Length: 368
Ligand code: F6R
Image (cartoon, rainbow, N blue to C red; front, side, top):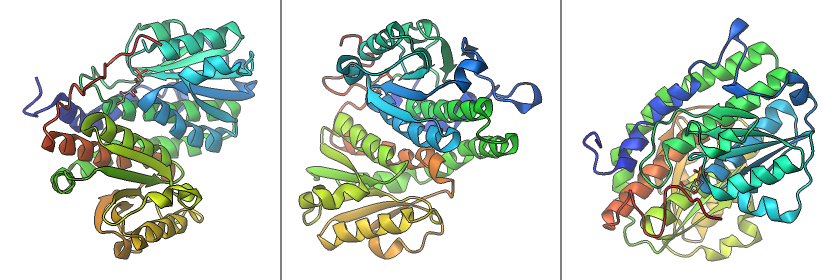
């Protein structure tokens, strides 16, 4: 049942190329136009949207952070991303020109369910991104994009996360199509880039052994930091969450630009810092990340850098280097998170922890 793997989680990590491919199937209807699964929202309503609020918890929340970068860039619609447990209790400003997007793998998370009930009571329209057919959250929503990860057994989400990212990109493109903020051929091009992602993920999975070795070399670590920028920032947060959940290690993700505003004080000799390096050629992003990496390294950090193939500028600053395929910055989370999942899984295994059933955690959190 684990296909020869020691853990369901490891099996699920390796199922990600398929899960991503499955989540892209059947999205194009007549004339190549994107279509969503259950859409009880008129085009009119989408055109009239003033803002989108994404609500979710945990890993799903990090998918929501990536969604913000994609939706705002492709649709010019303002997006807020909020933890479901905070949303409801702060008297949020929502009305019938607000689309609330609830992301939930299980579809049963109580915080998220309560948040959509509140949003609906204020007149908002609700779209669910969910992996579980017929669960409570999609049932109570106006529209649904189902992810096709298949059942996820490992408590820590992996393929669930990747398929949520895919659904977020699809939603962004769909809104762009309806609002007319992107031309059809631009949408086609991004769809093709998405359709190439399963092969890219496969390529990253081929370096699993090297990542495992790296993970085992960090068994003695007491704390691990993760740095990212732009769409790599939520990846850093998700990488840190995986390590907390599985290895019970102190792990924290930071936006690289925030380092100098405080966190750099944490850097000490030998502290492992995993750095998600954005692709080159995007404004100042790559150069800024590089200087952040230099700063932590100059203070003794041991840098483990995830950088795209062909990025030579990173080499002098990386104590260890993991190569990623060349992909656009907005889609990079789909490949960049893979090494971090493998790292956490292997480190936890080396520490003797139960990777599939981490202590204190449940797969579905049905209490607020
Ligand atoms: C972390 C993890 C959790 C869930 C969170 C929301 O690995 O799995 O953080 O992402 O509990 O769960 P869903 O997506 O089912 O609402």
